[in-house]
Image (cartoon, rainbow, N blue to C red; front, top):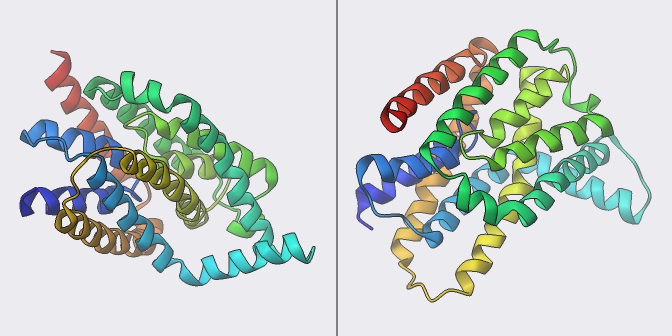
Length: 266
């Protein structure tokens, strides 16, 4: 892979993984639009590792507290606000893990087309706008319940459809449940840690069983670019979210979806 290819895909993964605009859709579309060869499984694993490192680094204090609290709840039967949040993250991860395990091949075969991406981009963009406008935005992260976790987890299953956006659909669910924008975003980002880890692990197992030649320079470079851009993205997004709301991302999704329909449906 040349450096332009590495830089473009690394930046794209890092910037879109945590914005409500769908990283998977952009990674599928960019090579098609510019005529690049498919980046391959190994590079996909590398850029996902980069975004995982970014979110863990940004939320490092939260992650340590949640892990310690979860362990205390399991081994010492000691419940706390942090242990409850940790359990909510675990519960919310179960539906998408099961769906990915049983539906992954179907999705890879039938749902990776530009028209599917276009439809999902528009439909779930409009749903995000509706949630942002109609959501009460009065509940904090500490008020997330078992029922909330199940609902957000079920919404997260929809993110398996390219164009949906994992962060977008989980923030949509959070807003519909009355969470503030910041609480919905933070819960979505914390939920991404086990999801990205599990998805990356599955792809790593696929990679280990293949005969692909590993280009370590491309993989490491892609991971670094992805990590740095993802960290910057999380930082700016959380700082600006309350001021700008979701409308800029909804507008972007509508324009992108319309362009894709124009290019591939007519």
